[in-house]
Length: 486
Image (cartoon, rainbow, N blue to C red; front, side, top):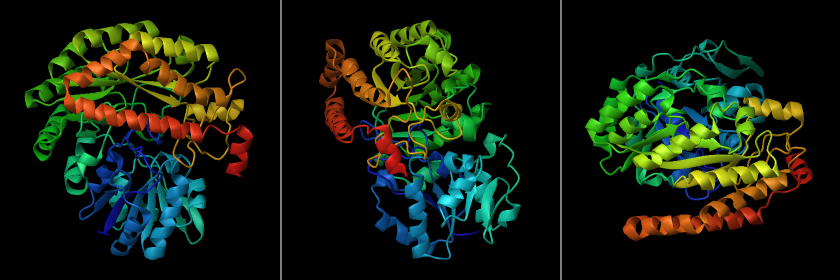
């Protein structure tokens, strides 16, 4: 067994890791997701170590020398961080020329040849799910016998046959064992989750066909492959024992509510464990299910509304209706379920009027908190293919964030410029949060809880600092982006 180091490399300040999120960019407030995609294979390789550099505040100078003690390094990469991660791989080889370096993640899985050509220090990249891939390579299996990789062979790049999709999800070991061994959970923050929190997956894949969503179109697929309720209950019981300080557990499945009977069964078991939990959900969960989830410890739902315009939802194949979303949100409010709503500006069909419509919609349904993102055409998604075909891309080399980690508006339409899309994010936030009713609500929560007050004041400072920095590095012109990219 090779002595193996799993790495989420150092990146720009505030890089959230991206393992559990759609957009690997700096957040408005300090946010870090758990490196669950790396923790899973790390749990399968005896003697391995997982280092998550961004939340631990580790620099290249602190992490790179560790290469001297390992035979294999597995780096999780993404489209925004790939260039940085490729340079970091070179640094590992400088520290230890004999170390074998592999890269995993959606970006290299979709663009294996480009990735290996763009990262000369990397020996192999994984295609698709990489849990067993990493375990086999760590166990010393020759690369040409490992399914689902692209690798270097005497100056040539070769691709092995595809690896079958994992069907028996219960066969994968618990990630909380690796969390306990290698991570400092207090270093992970998400603005809408109670701190400290722990997140993990109970299944992979999503039945929805959203054209922009990265994971189902690259790693997870459109079948929801799940662990059994028994397996989830056992891991959550272990997590509760390992992390008594945790105030909330988050299930990061793309859409935990895709399988309603299973969600209800798991909720009942979590209720017996006395666990407070939250999850991703679509804005169409029936009230009966919401009642069961709420009665068994559900606190918050992360809901991707995306837009307040029905045609845009149809354009992106969201599979939801505005009227159903309104009813769902009203039911959640009546049942005491908090909602963190996410919205995307700059999707196909966007105009200045649809942006105003989405802002009005968000203010009307009144989620507790919101996140406003720019449409991000990740390679491997239908949105990316559309953008290439229609000439919407403002950049040709894949940069989705600037050098400070702030999202750029990568798309532009005849009806809407990239500059207007970029500027509309701040307008959205201000019109949502700077209303008397919302200010009164937020202040009320702060008055009731000194802890909430401390946290909201810190987040407020971070939020305004983010907007200030975003304005300083304002969206450059398409020509400037093109020039910089070249």
